Every structure is written in C-alpha cells, then in structure tokens.
Image (cartoon, rainbow, N blue to C red; front, side, top):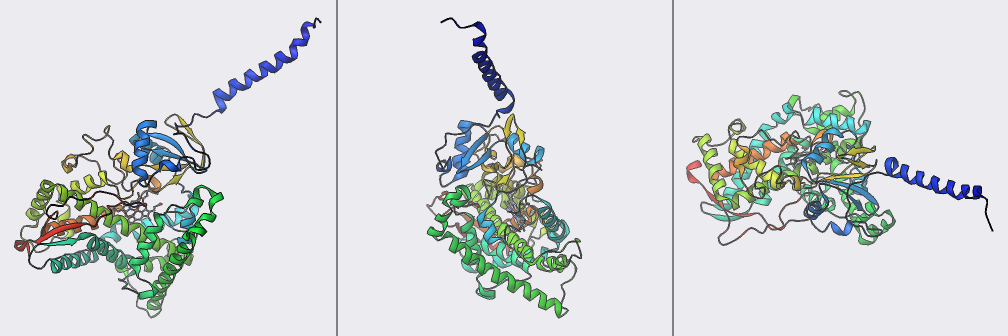
Length: 503
Ligand code: HEM
C-alpha cells in the first residue's frame, strides 16, 4: 500500500521535537555538577568517609579533584580541598555559603540551634554574631582578661613543677592543657571556676560528654528514614541527658549572676564576665533587641564548647611536633629564654617579640588544624563555583587539613619547618586561604585572637621553665581520634625537667 508523502510529516515532527528537547536540555538546563565518586543506594558515599573523614576525603580529592560532590545519605555535599575552592566559598560566595545545615544534635543541645555556631544564616544569626564579636570577643575585652590568663598559666606551671619535684618526671600534659583552657574560659565567660559537682554537674565531665556527642555520627541527619535508629542506640536518650545537665548548670550560673546584680554587687567595666555582658544585652540596652534566656544559654555554651576543646587540642599538637623535633624545641627555648633575660616570668608584653614562637604555632596549625573539616556550611542559593553548578541547599565541607598539605601552596608540605613562616606574611586570621584553621569570612571563628594569646602564653611559659623531651625509647603514637576536634588518641606524655636557672 502506498502512503501519501504527507503521512510522514507526523513522525518527522515528533523526531524533530525530540532532537530540539535534547539539544536545549544539554546546553542550558543540564547542570555541570562537580565530579562524584560512585555512590550506593540509600547511603550514597557515607561508606567512603571512614573513621577519619579528613584523611578519606583527602585521598578521594586526589582522584576526583579539589571540588567534589558527595552524597551523604540523601544530602548532596560539596567538598573543597584547594585554596581556590576555599577562596570561592569563603570570599566570592561567602554570603550564599554562610548558612549551616540542620543538625538534630544542635537542635537538642543548643536550644534549637539558637547558638552562633549552628544557627542558620539570617537576621537572628547576624544579631547574635555581632553581640559575640562586638561585646564579648573584641580586642579590648580580650586584652582585659590578661590577668586571668597570666594567673591560670602560672597555676599550670606550678602544678607541673609539683608533679615533677626537683627532678625529671613523665607527665601527661593533656590534663594540664585541658584544665588551663577550661579554667580560663570559666573565669572569663562565667565569672569563676566551677568545682566538681557545683551547680548540679561536673563542668569538665559534661563538656567531655558534649565533645563526644559532637563526634558521634547521627544517621538521622543524613537518612531521615532511619532517624529511629538513634532511639534504638540510645543516642537520643544520651543527648537529652547531657542537655538537661548542661541546662541545670547554666541556669545556676545565670541565677547566681542575677542575685549578685540584685544585691548591687555589679562587676564593672572590663571586669565584667560574658554572662554579665549578655544579661545587659538581654534587656535590650545595648543592641536594641531583647535576647531570650535560651539564646543567652546557647551563646555561653557555644563559647565554652567551641573555645575549650579546640584551644587545648591546638596546644597539644604544638607540643607533639616540638617533642618530635628537638631542634625546633631548642630554637624556641633559646628565643624565649633569651627574651626573658633572667625575668622570673614571661608576660604577655613579651609575646610580641617572639617570632619563632608564632612560627611554631602556625606550622602546627597548618599540619594539624584542630577542626580539620571546618564546621559544615550550606548554600542558600544556586551558585557557579570554579565552572561547576552548585544547587541551593548543598552542604559545604572545607578540608583545611588537605589545604594545609597542598604541595601547590607549600614546599615539602609534610615536613615540620616553622622557619617557612619567619619571613612570610601568611597568618591564620582568614585572609590567607592556604592556612585556615579558624575558617574565614562571615562564619569565621570570632575567638581567634582569644585562642592565640592563650596558646602563645602557655607555650612560652612552659618552655621557659622546663626542658621537655619524649619518654626514653618511646615514639609518639600519632593515631588520631574521631570527632569534630581531632587530637591524638594516646596521652600527651613528656619528660619534664624543671630548669633551675629559670626559677
Ligand atoms: C585553637 C582554637 C580554635 C580553633 C582552631 C577554632 C576553629 C573554628 C572554626 C574552624 C570555626 C568555623 C569557621 C567557619 O565556618 O569558617 C569556628 C567557629 C566558631 N568559633 Fe572557634 N576556634 C577556636 C577557638 C575558639 C574560641 C576560644 C572561641 C570563643 C571564646 C571560639 C568560638 C567560636 C564560635 C562562636 C564559632 C561560630 C562562628 C559562626 O558560626 O559564625 N572559637 N572556630
């Protein structure tokens, strides 16, 4: 049967329509996404994170490039492992990448994520971040706590000396560093130290539990269908218990301040602690908006948990590297002792002259950023990043550990060589994206200045007063723990010998 020629028009029309559809989808609508490792159904790439995700992601980035798109359960997550990618995220697209992903951990422990660190980007976060930056952690206020830092560091030195007696002893420096930072932050933030059991809790134990929860993998955040697993494993109950005990403690601290204020025993001027300042802000006197009680507690908890763990972990890594590099230790001691010039005690005035001390700290933070995968962010709009389309609501992880070891930025990156910072302007303040232990941009750490001066003073005083070495015949076990803040698993053992000529 012969068909008329026009009967071919209908299939031809459909064929052309199909071609045009394909063409336009490829050229304009289909997004060029970053390369992704193969994912599994439901869990996506979760199985590729391992127990030390900063190292696993570093390895994956060698294969898939410095910008990768992973799927952690149902959540798309961009992983950045190069200076350029970090700069794009924290500078070029800082505004769009300044939110934080929802976390049930933060919702339960930080009063519905009303703290600075976990709060999503928006007016509320802008207001509380400005309170923290302008009222709590500005340069003048950080300076004003100098006496507290000097006193607590002296206490630490005395305790180490008591432990040593007059000879050499093996001591665990972790406890000393931990108590030092915990005591300083207690006094600065809460007005005094809280001893065991006071306020219904042992501050250190509960903070340790909080730190442990920080590091616990919460399946429900990635695969909402499996949220019930947290009930089964007891994680939900544990979070509730820790949240309750933290709340009891914070309520006790706030009530104590209110009673003191009602009695007219105000702390004045720079002597105010953070709770004093926040109670003033709570009345809207300073900022023009009232701060709810839960927000106040969330901010205090943020400072406590964000400031303690990180600072003593950084101190530990500096000491670890110095013990493994006795020549760097000797050079540092020569600098500190030379500048101390027979003085009984190093003060904060001396720190400005200690260039090698600063270099030693930067080099340790380069190799061991305490939070190797910076606190996760989330994009709030679609963006184009280094040629790739990144859809809104994509999680963003920046691998500061990997960036600190990038051979494109650092010569012999695995080598510990503080000298590389001696004639360099590279700093940790968030302007140099090759060194970002404190993050950068709007979400950058507001406690950088606070942390650095604690680390500098503690380190200068300890190497001034003691000779320190690895216990005989021992090598440091460098195996790292899991969690948000990464330190070595093994204790921080060192042989400390009081140096009589400096007492
Ligand atoms: C060596 C010590 C410290 C390290 C390595 C560190 C590191 C960090 C990092 C990586 C972030 C996330 C930055 C980003 O997303 O770009 C952060 C945020 C934060 N840090 Fe620190 N930190 C330290 C000490 C402190 C101290 C002493 C305080 C307070 C006294 C503090 C308070 C905070 C707060 C409130 C945030 C949340 C900022 C926001 O989300 O807007 N940190 N820190």
